[in-house]
Length: 553
Ligand SMILES: [Zn+2]
Ligand SMILES: [Zn+2]
Image 1 (tube, rainbow, N blue to C red):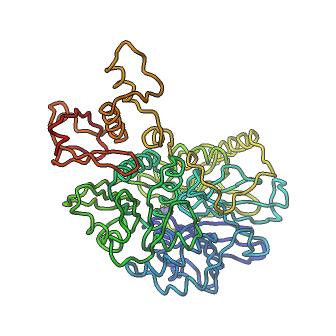
Image 2 (image 1 turned 90 degrees about the horizontal axis):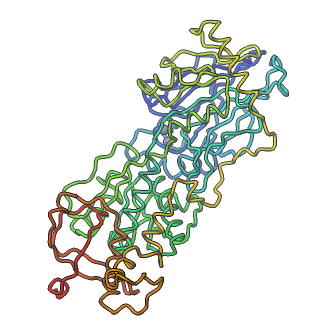
Image 3 (image 1 turned 30 degrees about the vertical axis):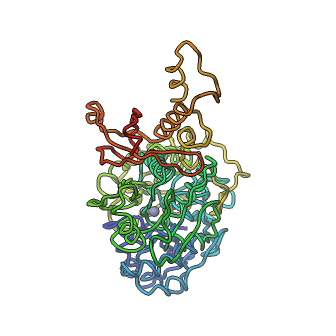
């Protein structure tokens, strides 16, 4: 067997790859992994070559934009069942803004797989769950080679194409496994990284919850698939907090949610709405796409709330998105890219101990960063369109530009690293199937959200208020003897404590008197809505002094 790779769009996203598997008898299988911008298999395939399969890792448009245009020779498009479901919804929708070719060409060829599937007698493929976005998969390609020299069972070799991945689960879909019941010999490694995902996620959750629980109308604008992911997390968080919140997914995000068969407690869906007010609620969260609200559901909802200073418009940006401005409602723009940290990528390569790593989904500086990153395997950080041989005549090959002595050193290190790792034949390869959501594993830091928002959470101000009233007495655990004024004050301070602080400190130090109206949610809770404009950021924590003249208004 001979195995080679060829970048299929090295001048665009470089996430797409053409793999060639050629048997000793000369039979060749050509397998395209993803079909992003600029992919044209006709320019890659020789006259006597045919496409045997396309592997679609996930339903992000940078990976499927050219899918329909590259379907050839009755080749199936293999995808996880969930990604196939999403694509059926997403591809017709994507046609509105993109030249995606004839949608039916892709959908007719679409073949969901969840187990080993034969491409040749000696070549099989299987999806493995990869976190990142609902339904995302990597693919393991397993080939048998009678020439395999190193005495492996049946001469089986394994190549893993990670696709975009996280080792974190995503909306219950497992993250990419770092251990397999067989050796991973080669990896096509997507190296998009993001070190601030968890911070961005938790900051956004705080912003959304604090405004919604304070009675505001909150709109979250994001891509449909991220909307589904986000709704799952918000739904699970509010359940964990035991504080219900009207949570509505609308438009395309609603369609995806329903198509995936998701059923998170508290999440409602409205595929179509006549008037924005039908899907907006005081103290509720509405999730809509796209993330740039120039069209679609997000733009209708923004129009409906832009003059309401109490409303909040949160953009979860997964791509290059312009932040909304010139509106009276509060806005927040959060970059939320669900990719692994650099450290996670390093750990993955260390754990898998492959002989070969082909760096994907990177160009320029990012590519250079990974060129010499791993010293116990051959790293192919190429940026050309050549056909590079990875494996031939029973052996994984060193890149041609590496000196023989260096290659020997790398092989020795790889061999040593493999010795310290034991392959557990019983370890399961995670299928692309939803499991129950583990908020912590998904990157949600529940504890601060609980102390801020959970019912009956400790009230940090109640104790000090009581202490101030009777400084020599320790504050009792529960004090029902507080007089009415004190309990109202404590309640108000409690409500404000739930507001996260990003206060403009200069303004705060000078002090400013503004009027606020006391509102009640009807269930005994109270909060303040500012009557006067104040120079405060959303989420700011302020200290208030109750004065009679203010409360009379
Ligand atoms: Zn992606
Ligand atoms: Zn991508």
